[in-house]
Image (tube, rainbow, N blue to C red; front, side, top):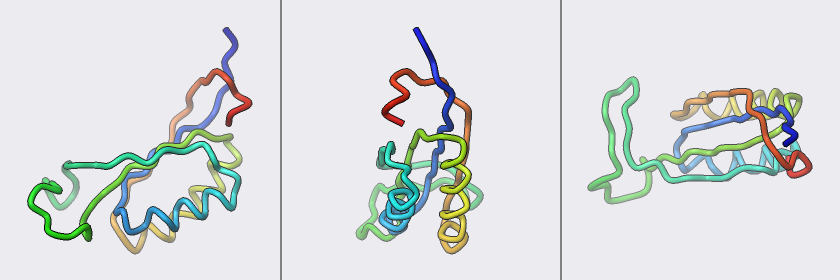
Length: 103
């Protein structure tokens, strides 16, 4: 089996920032991504949970994308200003994928 190296970007952030992040990804050609709901966690402010929230104001989501190293660098530069205004964590890792024509 043949593998191709790509970058995997994982972003956990407020759902209010999702559309802006997705637009920036789309503008840069980063089209292979998925959005997942985050139900609870622990960060620098301690534990948090969606349980019992009345509004969606504090909801969090995770965006996972696979892309080339060049697009990953551009994507991170494009989204960092958004995350500085809200909560967010970004991680980047090297991954091996199959079907590289998809990414």
